[in-house]
Amino acid sequence: MSISILLLIVAVIGVAGYLAGSWRANALAGGKSSSLHSRPGYYGAFVAIWSMLPAVIVLLVWIIASPIYIGSTVRAGFPDEVKAEPQATQNLNYNMIGAIARGFRLLSVEERQAVFADAATARTVLAGKGVPLAADPAPYMLKSADDLNRMTTTSSTILSALVMLSALVGAVLSYRAIAPRFRARNRVEGVMLAALIGASSIAILTTIGIVASMLTEATHFFNMVPAWEFFFGTVWDPRFAAAGATASSGQFGLLPLLAGTLYIGFVAMLVAVPVGLFAAIYMSEYASRTVRSVAKPLLEVLAGIPTIVYGFFALITVGPFLRDISAQLNGLVTGNYSNFIQAQSVLTAGFVMGIMLIPYVSSLSDDIITAVPRALRDGSLGLGATRSETIKRVILPAALPGIVGALLMTASRAIGETMIVVLAAGVAARMQLNPFEPMTTVTVKIVNQLTGDLEFTSPQTLVAFALGITLFVITLCLNIYALYIVRKYREQYE
Image 1 (spheres, rainbow, N blue to C red):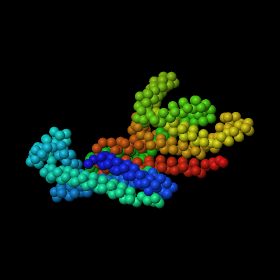
Image 2: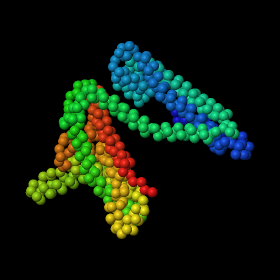
Image 3: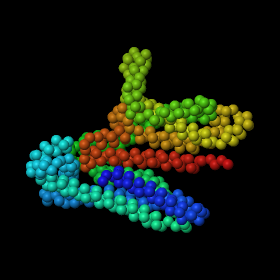
């Protein structure tokens, strides 16, 4: 039985439990709801929860544990010479067995007998069923595939029985527990509180998992390449080694990538901060309600445009435009119409990225400025200050901590951008101060190092995790500092 059908059956049992629990509560109340500890709906919800919750837990545990057990059992049946091979080879063999098992489900009885009679025939028959194999399967693979199908079928049958049994037992026991003074509301709210805590913990657990996975692989990298060479190196030249090689050929200097990341982010902030901040001031202090209702959504549309579209815009419009303008200016001044701004440059990437960041700055700053109490504005205007003086001397100082925090969070967004930099700034890893020349960032090199069919055994691929954990620490520090600024300098108004 498929998982979707099982979930549907469990949901039906839960709905039936809700109706039965509510009916039983009303029946016990005898028309006097005051005799019940909780409303009838809570009794129904109690039965529904304990009809579905045990079944879902059994389902999740089985889905996780069953493939592990079946996989280990199938691998245990491999011949000794196969078990002696490297783990990567065994994984490939197991994947091939899985493909054969999927093909077996499509075969008739006669076709299965022909498959087991000859390996070459097996490959031909399975290819005809849409399951191509890279080579003729070994006899043990055919047997293992048959065992895999058999154990999978048995596991599915046992799972269906256990899930339905858990749902029915939970429904019966919770239904029998209903009594007039039974604290159904407390039980239901306790389950909902646990669910809310679990939901709020997902982000924390996800962050911990991401950091742990990156740290594990980054540790392997630093075992091959000294940390000081990575953090203080000035040359980025990984020079990919042959497949399976573990020698640390190449140079893995972080500084050129870090310089490009900060430089492009700085140019982007130079574009985004003035435009976004002035737009926020206008919309919150000067714009009429009609203008604000139109301008604010139009400005925030920029935040919904995919970054790859910004990259195309930089590649085919902004970059060539800056290149041609520089050639014209150079021709007017020197008579030599050669361009001094490259189509792919720090300026191009920073300018387009700044356009992308404008809605982040304007939206956050607008909300912060709008939150300044109206009494401060009225008091300043009542004392004779103009609107511009009120903004400069009252509103902006009051909103400054929040604005600074918003700008730091926007900067962390700029540091993590990838697609715009790939298309607008190039992939040249170098240290230079000319904004008209190409540079690259940490995120671009992470993509480059993990592109293709690679094994995570060489420093050329493992360096991506070192770059990732470095970028994570930088953005985390920016966000923590932004929260610190907001909390330390937040004004409290009464």
